Structure formats: C-alpha cells, structure tokens
Length: 130
Ligand SMILES: Nc1nc2c([nH]c(=O)n2[C@H]2C[C@H](O)[C@@H](COP(=O)(O)OP(=O)(O)OP(=O)(O)O)O2)c(=O)[nH]1
Image 1 (tube, helix red, strand yellow):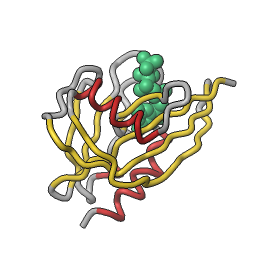
Image 2 (tube, helix red, strand yellow):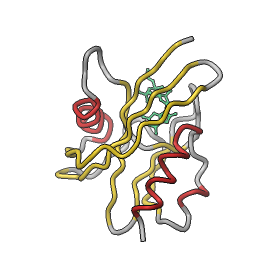
Image 3 (cartoon, helix red, strand yellow):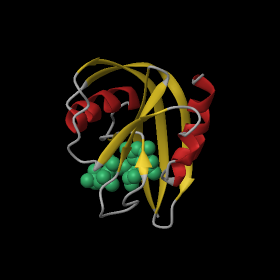
Image 4 (tube, protein in one colour):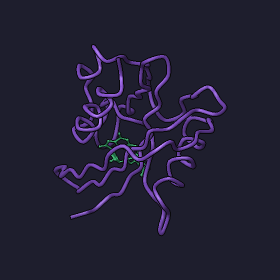
C-alpha cells in the first residue's frame, strides 16, 4: 500500500480559517482541504509547507506551531498529514490548483465537504475559533 506524507497549512485570519477545494479530477476530487502538499525526500514538514504554499498559492507564510498529525487509511493509500498553524506574511492566496476557496468560521466549519483525513484537523481548528 502506498504511503503519502503531506504538510497542510491552517491559516487563521479575522476568526476564520482558509479552506480550498480540490479540482474535479484525481483522488478526492471536489473535496475541501487545508492547502499543502507532499513532503520531498528528506524534507521537514515545516519546510515543505512554506514551499508548497509559495508554489500553490503564490503566498509567503511562516509556521507558528505544529497543530496535529493525522494518520488516515484511504482506499488506495495511507496518509500521514502534518497540519501546522501558519501566519500569512505576504501574498493574496492566488489559486492555481484549487477550484474554489473560502474563509470559514466556527459555526460552518464542519459543514464543508472535507477530505476525510481533514475532519480531525477541522475539529482542532474549531477549538481555536471564537
Ligand atoms: N494538501 C492536502 N492534501 C490532503 C489534505 N487532506 C487529504 O486527504 N489530502 C491528500 C490528498 C492527496 O492525495 C494528498 C496531497 O497530495 P497533493 O495535494 O500534493 O497532491 P495531488 O494529489 O494533488 O497530486 P500531485 O500532483 O502533487 O501528485 O493528501 C489536505 O488537507 N491538504
């Protein structure tokens, strides 16, 4: 079974969190996620997340702290996902791979159609929002 290790960014601003919707094809098409991507060989998650957000959203971020690591068995692969609370430094979070994005508050957070592995992350985020 394939094992994928991913870093994901939790960006909080104005009491809302940034969520992005995956494209219409590929695994988990149309599901919502915290942006990020796969770690490169030997790369630390905190380095990977800064690189991925720069590549994917043309935005510079910094890691504030590790939030949660989730392990999830999907039908075709096993996922380890490190989610980091991050701060935006510069850039407008321009979508290049995702088809939609939103800033979502505590009340609506768990109503999004999240990728399954993201549910425990969303529950942690819920605790950080008022
Ligand atoms: N980035 C990210 N990926 C997630 C989340 N939740 C979740 O199950 N995943 C899964 C979806 C993908 O299979 C994998 C992340 O890979 P990715 O976004 O770099 O890659 P991808 O499948 O779009 O494909 P690739 O072109 O990079 O190979 O982890 C999440 O919150 N953020």
